[in-house]
Image (tube, rainbow, N blue to C red; front, side):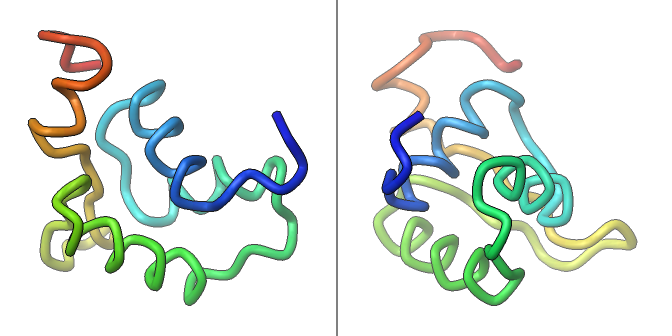
Length: 83
């Protein structure tokens, strides 16, 4: 992975690989290569991706927010796979 890959691409790639994740699971996955990443950084990026129609963030649950790719983003990559 390139050292300066934008967080937006990292989020989409992680969701394509792992499927729907909680916000804390996604942060943990992203921090493997971006140690300084905070939950605030993640929420900012998720908000921008959601406005663009690339991800869907569900309401708060016990385990946090649930993040998944939208059908539009799934259509540009792996068709028909749910995980």
